[in-house]
Every structure is written in C-alpha cells, then in structure tokens.
Length: 289
Image (cartoon, rainbow, N blue to C red):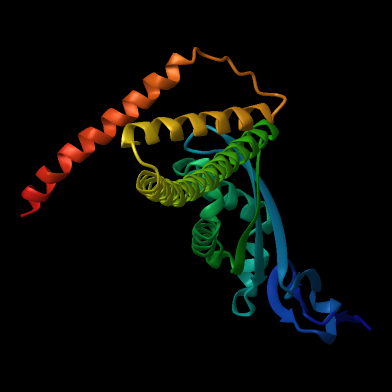
C-alpha cells in the first residue's frame, strides 16, 4: 500500500517531487510513485516540437504601421528539463515578449518596401535573440519564420495604385516605342516608294523627250519650209487638245479655260528653254574637257 503508478505518454516526461522538492524525471511508460515517502507528480513537459504564432504591431522607418506575424518553432531540451519546468511560469508568454522586443527593435530601422524583401533577415535576428534568451531556460529555438506582413488597408491600396501606375507607365513607353517603329517604317516605305516613283517619272519623261525629238526630226525632214519653231508649236497645240480631252473625260473635274494666247506664251517659254539648253551644251562639253 502507498505505492501509486503513473503512465507517461510518449514524447512527454513528468516531473516527480518528494515533499515539494524536485526528485526525478519520469520517462514515457509505466512509472511507480511512492506516496508514503511524499512522491507526487508536479507536472509534465511535452518533448514535441511546438509552434507559437506571434502577431506584433510596429512602425517602419517611413512611419507606416504594420502587423508582423512571426511563427516560432521551439522544443524543450532533454538535457535541461529542470530549467524548462522550474525557471519559467509560462514559456509562451516569455517567447512572445522576446519576439515583440526583437521585432520592434528591427523593423523601425527598415522602410516599408524593404520589410517585404528582408523577411529572412528579420527572422534570423529574431531567432538569434530567442536562442540567446531561451537557452538558459531549457528551450531551444528550432526555426523562426516571418509568415505575414500586413500594412494598413489604405497603405496597401496606395501601394497597389503605385504599382499599377508604374506598370501603366511602362506599357505607355512600350506602346510609344511600337508606334515610333511603325511611323519610322512607314516613312522609310514612303521614301522608298517616292524614290522608285521618281525613277519611273524620270524614265517616262526621258522617253517622252526622245519621242518628241524623233518626231521633230522626222517631220522636219519630210516636210519642206517648216522649221523647228513651227513643229514645236504644232506639237504643243496637239498636246493641249489631248489635255482637254483627258480633263473632259472626268465629270468631277472643274476646268477654268484661259485665252488662246496663253498657249503661245507656253510655247515661247518651252522654245526659250530649248535654246538655252542648246547654248549651254557646248560650254558643258568644254568644262568636261
């Protein structure tokens, strides 16, 4: 009589006291407790990996309040069960206090945008601080994670608007570059088309000049008492009538006729041009020599 027993769960231990003083650690399984000599179960400790989520509100360097959620994974040290049981009344509250202290000492040195990119550095600082503080109490810190960073709703909306504006600006630049390329290519195509069109017009006019020259030579040789002036005036009149025929073929064209003497003026201008060209030809040959 006076012998009791206790069944300790796996991954757990129980602290046995004798007359209120620590006596031994009961390991998992069946354990006898001698009540006659004052042995009692003072409490138990879990050897499992435990996780504590801590939400801490703090202010960043640019005066923005954020909620930082830190997940701390810790475990009781098997070699220091006495300290884990007797030195701390509430290990969770103690860890929470250390997390608050570390977060509120680290985050105020960082701007809001940098907080999201330095999560690992913040978690590393928290782990180092907790390891130094909790090792003397019989707890080891396995891992520390910054699982969430929550700015105020208005701040998040402003950040989203800034991000959207930046993306719109990039899209506008890309669109402008595309339009620029399109305009440049169109200008290059137009220049090439004009160049080719100019070559075609030049060839057409050269062919017309050659034809007129041959016509004048043939007409002058076949008909006596006709000089070059008469032939040119005749051809000008013929082309004038051809022009009237082409203009009259279109119903939408408005034509303002001029006096017949204008044709003579035009022919005189062309004749003078031919004479000036013939006068300049010998000088050009002399300059080439």
